[in-house]
Length: 392
Image (cartoon, rainbow, N blue to C red; front, side, top):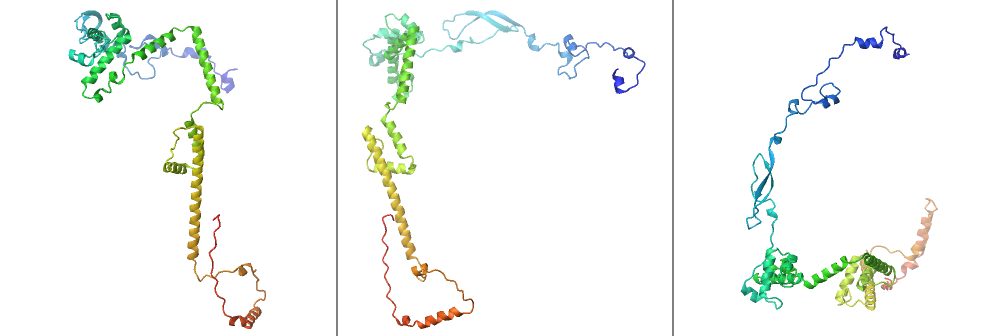
């Protein structure tokens, strides 16, 4: 069974081999010009790839113009502007198309020299005299500093007398600092100069080198011992910080206590407390913050907070009293006042209907009580003001 049986197609008497033989043979395609054999093979021998090339085939084997330059290395002489003796040296130079490079030596721009001050005999006699140094030694020092660009290790090696590096530095920097200060019109003109701003400290430099030498000369055992000592010190500090007898500054503790006191009061009230303390000539922070002084200071702040709260309550009560007095004076006189009898008497509805019987009885009773009409009216009673309680 083949595919035709499955699809139900009629079978032809020709086999697949005969169909292949009936097809005309393909003509061999020739490799196009400008395409390498590897690229042609990658495309399956169907000619050029389906994408349009960005470079024409005629330009593929053409070399760029830069590769046509003739580059050569030549052994040529050179001079440097950094030297004053016109010394001529040689080095290899890249020459393009036979044109030799011109100009100064490319590394001459990195030649930087120290600006060493020079002084006259008069300036030396006025500002630079030192009993530990003679003028000849000072002249030799400044000459070597200019010659070796302040390389004091080399200067100490070339100095004629036995002087340490710290002595040479101290003499040079102190003399240069004195010259700068006395030559300037004012001290502010040279206050930013490093020689004036940071004076050289020979003792500190000697101690620094000694400590550095001791650190570098330690053995492994000493390093382990120092590490253990530091770890023990850290543990002790942590245990002290975790305990309650720990060391602290009373001023820091006082600030925390003041913040705790004023936390519920508010920023405005705290400012009023500070203002009251200033009016009373009391320092906001005690000058001698002992334990007793800090306790008294916090107690004073609490009392001031209480005083301010009482003053605020008194103002509120006075405002209520004044408001009640104004309302009693402005009340209308024609408004009838209800007596306690009217308030306590319950309301009785009229159940007689619409016959008018109760109304006649009321009129009859009113007419029968004539004795009250002839009686004189009672004199008006004067009202005494109500006393205010302590809570008001």
